[in-house]
Length: 146
Image (cartoon, rainbow, N blue to C red):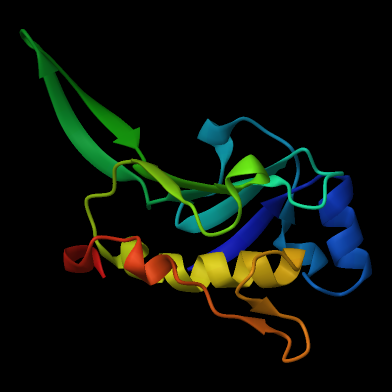
Protein backbone atom coordinates (compact mmCIF):
# COMPACT_ATOMS: atom_id res chain seq x y z
CA UNK A 1 0.00 0.00 0.00
CA UNK A 2 1.36 3.41 -0.97
CA UNK A 3 2.04 5.94 1.79
CA UNK A 4 1.22 9.61 1.16
CA UNK A 5 1.82 12.53 3.50
CA UNK A 6 -0.42 15.50 4.23
CA UNK A 7 1.50 18.72 3.60
CA UNK A 8 2.97 20.67 6.53
CA UNK A 9 6.34 22.21 7.42
CA UNK A 10 7.76 18.90 8.72
CA UNK A 11 6.74 17.11 5.52
CA UNK A 12 8.33 19.91 3.47
CA UNK A 13 11.55 19.28 5.42
CA UNK A 14 11.35 15.53 4.71
CA UNK A 15 10.99 16.28 1.00
CA UNK A 16 13.93 18.70 1.15
CA UNK A 17 16.19 16.09 2.73
CA UNK A 18 15.09 13.40 0.27
CA UNK A 19 13.45 11.15 2.88
CA UNK A 20 10.16 11.24 0.97
CA UNK A 21 9.26 12.20 -2.58
CA UNK A 22 7.35 15.35 -3.50
CA UNK A 23 4.88 13.20 -5.44
CA UNK A 24 3.98 11.47 -2.13
CA UNK A 25 2.70 14.74 -0.64
CA UNK A 26 -0.94 15.82 -0.79
CA UNK A 27 -2.38 19.21 0.12
CA UNK A 28 -4.05 19.69 3.49
CA UNK A 29 -7.65 18.60 3.37
CA UNK A 30 -10.38 16.95 5.39
CA UNK A 31 -10.02 13.24 6.15
CA UNK A 32 -12.99 12.32 3.96
CA UNK A 33 -10.99 13.64 1.01
CA UNK A 34 -7.92 11.48 1.71
CA UNK A 35 -7.09 9.25 -1.30
CA UNK A 36 -8.67 5.81 -1.46
CA UNK A 37 -6.45 2.74 -1.47
CA UNK A 38 -3.60 4.60 0.23
CA UNK A 39 -2.24 5.21 3.72
CA UNK A 40 -2.25 8.94 4.44
CA UNK A 41 0.01 10.28 7.20
CA UNK A 42 -1.22 13.27 9.20
CA UNK A 43 1.12 14.83 11.79
CA UNK A 44 0.27 16.92 14.83
CA UNK A 45 2.80 19.00 16.82
CA UNK A 46 5.08 18.95 13.79
CA UNK A 47 7.83 20.99 15.47
CA UNK A 48 8.29 18.56 18.34
CA UNK A 49 11.01 15.91 18.25
CA UNK A 50 8.35 13.20 18.37
CA UNK A 51 5.12 14.40 16.70
CA UNK A 52 1.76 12.68 16.98
CA UNK A 53 1.30 10.48 13.92
CA UNK A 54 -2.05 9.26 12.61
CA UNK A 55 -2.04 6.99 9.57
CA UNK A 56 -5.42 6.88 7.82
CA UNK A 57 -5.67 3.63 5.86
CA UNK A 58 -8.54 4.08 3.44
CA UNK A 59 -9.96 1.26 1.33
CA UNK A 60 -11.07 1.54 -2.27
CA UNK A 61 -14.65 2.83 -2.48
CA UNK A 62 -17.30 0.23 -2.04
CA UNK A 63 -20.54 0.89 -3.93
CA UNK A 64 -23.58 -0.35 -2.04
CA UNK A 65 -27.30 -0.27 -2.73
CA UNK A 66 -29.17 1.19 0.22
CA UNK A 67 -32.88 0.99 0.86
CA UNK A 68 -35.07 3.06 3.15
CA UNK A 69 -38.73 2.28 2.77
CA UNK A 70 -39.54 2.33 -0.95
CA UNK A 71 -36.49 4.45 -1.90
CA UNK A 72 -33.22 2.95 -3.13
CA UNK A 73 -29.97 4.75 -3.81
CA UNK A 74 -26.37 3.92 -4.51
CA UNK A 75 -23.84 4.96 -1.89
CA UNK A 76 -20.12 5.12 -2.40
CA UNK A 77 -18.09 4.97 0.77
CA UNK A 78 -14.61 3.98 1.78
CA UNK A 79 -13.82 2.18 4.99
CA UNK A 80 -11.01 3.64 7.06
CA UNK A 81 -8.79 2.40 9.85
CA UNK A 82 -6.59 4.82 11.75
CA UNK A 83 -3.35 3.95 13.53
CA UNK A 84 -2.09 6.60 15.96
CA UNK A 85 1.29 6.64 17.70
CA UNK A 86 4.06 8.98 18.80
CA UNK A 87 3.77 12.13 20.87
CA UNK A 88 3.46 11.49 24.60
CA UNK A 89 2.71 7.80 24.03
CA UNK A 90 6.15 7.06 22.65
CA UNK A 91 6.67 5.15 19.44
CA UNK A 92 5.86 1.62 20.51
CA UNK A 93 2.30 2.26 21.77
CA UNK A 94 -0.38 2.17 19.07
CA UNK A 95 -4.08 2.97 18.96
CA UNK A 96 -6.21 1.38 16.26
CA UNK A 97 -9.73 2.46 15.38
CA UNK A 98 -12.02 2.23 12.41
CA UNK A 99 -13.12 -0.57 10.15
CA UNK A 100 -11.78 -2.40 7.12
CA UNK A 101 -13.68 -5.31 5.64
CA UNK A 102 -10.65 -6.60 3.75
CA UNK A 103 -7.68 -7.83 5.78
CA UNK A 104 -5.12 -6.95 3.07
CA UNK A 105 -4.55 -3.38 4.39
CA UNK A 106 -4.10 -4.79 7.91
CA UNK A 107 -1.30 -6.99 6.63
CA UNK A 108 0.45 -3.88 5.29
CA UNK A 109 0.38 -1.98 8.60
CA UNK A 110 3.79 -3.14 9.97
CA UNK A 111 5.51 -2.08 6.72
CA UNK A 112 3.64 1.25 6.66
CA UNK A 113 4.57 2.07 10.26
CA UNK A 114 8.21 1.14 9.68
CA UNK A 115 8.30 3.40 6.60
CA UNK A 116 6.80 6.33 8.53
CA UNK A 117 9.16 5.85 11.50
CA UNK A 118 12.14 5.69 9.18
CA UNK A 119 11.17 8.86 7.34
CA UNK A 120 10.64 10.73 10.63
CA UNK A 121 13.72 9.15 12.28
CA UNK A 122 11.69 8.34 15.38
CA UNK A 123 11.33 5.32 17.59
CA UNK A 124 13.56 3.20 19.76
CA UNK A 125 13.48 0.55 17.05
CA UNK A 126 14.93 2.98 14.51
CA UNK A 127 18.61 2.42 13.78
CA UNK A 128 19.78 5.39 11.73
CA UNK A 129 23.26 3.86 11.22
CA UNK A 130 21.70 1.04 9.21
CA UNK A 131 19.12 3.44 7.76
CA UNK A 132 16.11 1.29 8.52
CA UNK A 133 13.49 0.76 11.20
CA UNK A 134 12.24 -2.52 12.60
CA UNK A 135 8.78 -1.95 13.98
CA UNK A 136 7.33 -4.31 16.54
CA UNK A 137 3.81 -3.35 15.53
CA UNK A 138 3.24 -6.86 14.19
CA UNK A 139 2.87 -7.94 17.82
CA UNK A 140 0.20 -5.26 18.35
CA UNK A 141 -2.02 -6.35 15.47
CA UNK A 142 -4.25 -9.35 16.25
CA UNK A 143 -2.55 -12.37 14.67
CA UNK A 144 -5.66 -13.44 12.78
CA UNK A 145 -5.43 -10.18 10.79
CA UNK A 146 -1.82 -10.48 9.65
